[in-house]
Amino acid sequence: MEQMIPLFGPVPGGMEMMVILLIAVLLFGANKIPKLARSTGEAMGEFKKGRQEIEDELQNAADPETDPEVGGAETDANVETDTSEA
Image (tube, rainbow, N blue to C red):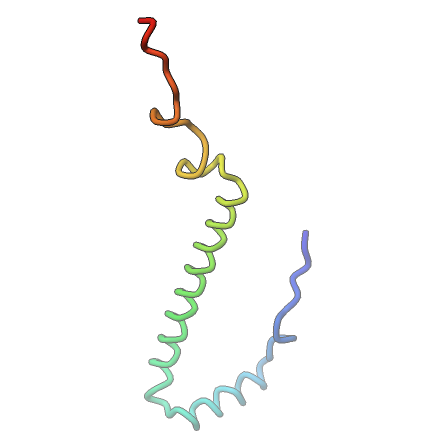
């Protein structure tokens, strides 16, 4: 398995999180923090959905046999038949 390397270093612990929360309350006010958290969550959800769509497209491009639009069965237009002998 691959070892995951965090992008931003170690995740802050208890006291660091309290300081970050205090700074957020001072900057944004207690009323706006739930709205800010909700919009951040929605943005993260959209980002994950977009990333998944791109990964699916890349997977389909790498393996065209699994995508019925790209490869696989031939269509009637591509198959040549000789009907003059019938």
